[in-house]
Image (cartoon, rainbow, N blue to C red; front, side):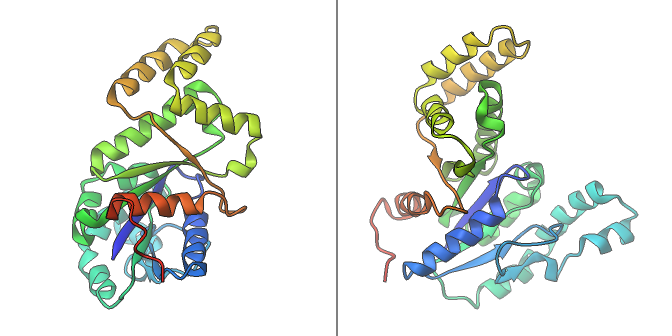
Length: 254
């Protein structure tokens, strides 16, 4: 079994993408299960095969620890790690090719707490990858794009897993906007030039410095536009998974 963690900021479309990708895999004869790791979600866009809410209730955490929603989310994130043996016990009963893992809506709860490393290690770090979803509304301007790429780089640095960058909800962008964002990722000089064109923006200096730092990390190279609603880019996620797990060999189709 290979694990694909869907990670991104709140509203980036993680849950919807998990549901759409599960459907696409099934339509192509590839077995997969879905795992929800967000104890605070009210509604999922798919039926979770394994759901952390079976063991952790955000409402109960709020009552037991006298916390508000934000504090309860932090405690719940740590409780997930404490209850990981329950999840792995259930998971061991599944014989499937992929586990599609929906992470908490608040990016920092998954990326920046040590409990997440415990979860990744327990589920098998050597057979895991990240699908990082960037919100298209944030990425429309150079400074927002760089902010999103900075978060992406931090997630990869923290978890140390292979990662594919996805521009989600691409159907909400015009063709011109989509091409410009893709060009920023693949050609940093274009992004740099667009920063210079926004020199009246007080955030430009900070953005350019962040851009230079990111450029030196080698993060730039490619971003894939995807849409759960229009079923766009799903095969490209699968292709990257084949590359990350099997060196590019398409050995998974029935």
